[in-house]
Image (cartoon, rainbow, N blue to C red; front, top):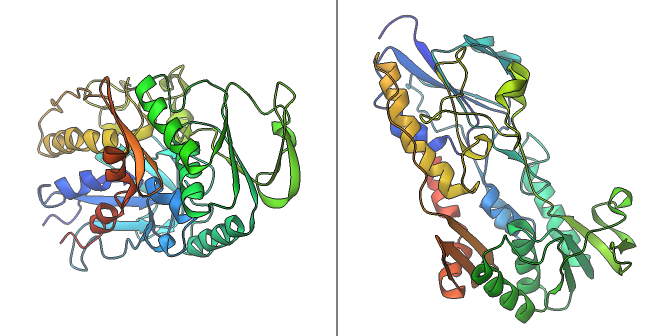
Length: 372
C-alpha cells in the first residue's frame, strides 16, 4: 500500500452510502474513502415523521457510523464534523481531525441533502436526537388540535401518522394548492380519500395569512388565520412547507454554479458543471436534474457515480452518463395505507402500504453494518 493515499472525500453519510458500498473494495490501493458527516450518527429522513409520533421508532431512524469501516480498514470516518468550504484541491472542515482541518482530495462527492424542519432533519449533531424525538412524541400525545401547514408528502404523511395513531385528536391540514402531492389526479384522489376516512380535515387552496407570527410546535392554543379569513385553533402547529436544498458549499465556491431552481448544476456524468472542478460529483436532493427529489432517485444516482469514481481512480475518464428513470413517488398514510405514482399510473393503499409498513428502515439499518 502506498505511503500517501489519495483521498476520495465524501461529504454526507446518508445517500452516499450506496456509493461507498459499491466502491470500498474496488478502489485501487492508491486510494481511500474519507467520509465526512456533520452528525455523530446516521439519520434516516424517510421514517423521521413516524419517529416523531410513535414510541420506539426513534431507534429505527438512527444508526451508528462507528463500524462502517473496520478497524484495519484504510478508509477513514470523520463524524461530528462539518465541511465548511472547498476548492479544487481540498475540503475545509470546522475542527481539527486526524487528517487535519484541510483535507486534500483526488475525487470529491457532495451528498449534502436538503434542509427540512425537525424531525425530517436532526436538530442536534449528538445522540441526544433520540431524546428530542421522544419529546416530540410526548407533545403530540398531549396535543388535542393539530394543524399541519403544507400538503406535500411531508404534510400528508404526518397527517396519516397522527390520524392512524390518535383517533381522538382534531387534525387539520392546510394546503395552498388544490391537489395533494402535486398535479397527478389519481395520486391526489387516493391520498384524499384515505386521509378523509381516517378523520383528517383538509383545507385546500388556502395559505396561512399570519405565518410570520406563528410559533411552530407544541404550546398554548393559538389561532391560525388563512388568506380567506378562516380561523383555525391549534395547540400543535407542524411545519410541512417543503425543503431547501443544502447547496451552501457549492454556492460559496462559485455562486454561478447554482441554477435558477436553487440546485447545483451538473453535467451528464453528475459532475459539478465547472471547468475548475473536473473531479467533483454531486448527488441526491442538491442536483439540478429534472426528476423528483426522492430516496429512490438518490439511490439511482449512486450506481452511476460509483462507476465514474472507479474510472477516475484508475486513470480513466468518467464516462457513464446519467439517465433519469420513470417517475416514482411513494407516499405513506400510516402503516396500512398510502399511494404510489409510477409514471402516469397511480396505485392505492395495497401498494402504498409497501412503504408504510417499515418505511424502509430495515434497509437503512443494514446499510450501516460493517463493510469490511
